[in-house]
Amino acid sequence: MGQLFSRRALLSTAAVAMAGTGMGIPRLHDHPLPRGFQTGVQVLMAGDYALVRGQKVGIVTNPTGILPDLGHEVDVMAAGDEIDLVAVFGPEHGFRGTAQAGGSEGFYVDEQTGLPVYDTYLKSGQALADVFTRSGVDTIMFDIQDAGARFYTYIWTMFDSMQAAASAGKRFVVLDRPNPITGRRAYGPVMTPQFSTFIGREAIPQAHGMTVGELAKLFNAEFLEQPVDLTVVRMRGWSRDLTYEDTGLPWVLPSPNMPTVDTAFVYSGTGMFEGTNLSEGRGTTRPFELIGAPYADHRWAETLDALGLPGAGFRPAYFTPTFSKHANALCGGVQLYVTDRKAFDPLKTGVAMIVTAKRLYPNDFAWRYDTSDPARPYWIDKMTGSTQVRTGVDAGKGPDEVEAGWADELRAFAEMRKKYLIYQGGH
Image (tube, rainbow, N blue to C red; front, side, top):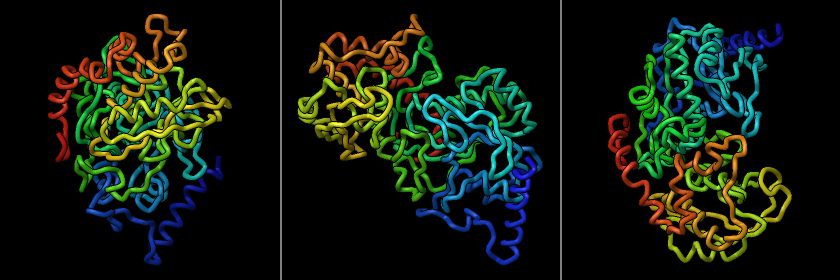
């Protein structure tokens, strides 16, 4: 333990020594990204942490708390003395990202910084409030890169953390980051209360079209029974039409199966295949782009191509997942390509893929069944937020008919969403 904390002292000493030589620890506001873009943490640093000065601070983050020079914000903060950072809170996959889906790192002392790392995964309510109280922090910051999909769990880590912070009397600060698939619009069905789980706590659509800072404002006003003392440190130079690459910020895997920005663009649609017996590509190098099963073949890609889905292309693909569904079994199927990001609709595409798979392989296609939850046994219902998609597909509806089923609820959300948008562009 002494060695761990001396490591932190060594980092601080090194920072002072480098400052004396004129080198210094890289200051993010000295190296602006193209178009003048800055993330929330850069804006915080540019203000010399005035927002949290005099407070004991903890941060909910993971490997995506990246700075443009590839350093991690926690390592930089711990090495200096401008901020009193006393705790880190790790979500699913952990602070350093060592755990697979459905796992975390537990409590430990971080070797690089000497900071205690508390495990928040699957903790909510009073249990999470107790973690925040035990850590001794006054303010909890949140900085994790989202993927833009309702069933990507980090936004619900933020929701639970806001709720727990309010209960524990802590301040909550969101350091905003881009929605990697742009924030032009929202897509898909809206969560209904009876299907609320950790992959969808509240009534937002499947692709929300918001940044985490905007979502935090919406959560605080619309869904939290006890609003938290919330501050959103907004980005500079971001607009709703920018893709992640437009910012110039390096991409860091938010989780092991989100390796590229391409993955994020398809995930809110093809993530629905987790609710079927087809492989969603876990155990391959292109998860959520490669979709298939031992029973699928070249006809699927041909059928999908014939639909002329906007911004989407398909090729027949054959792959053998190394883990998860159909591990070590040869699967036929498709690889999905986004050929035009502005035209691409992830939900229209995902539903069309499910509809055609069921029609082509009626004796083999099946919905994934959750035996531990007999009241809500179908995973697809939890992912889409209601029975609407599953029952529509089973009734033989086409993609457009299924999509029409959520039009009114999506329109209502879009009106509510407008009140909480921070950045310009989109609709």
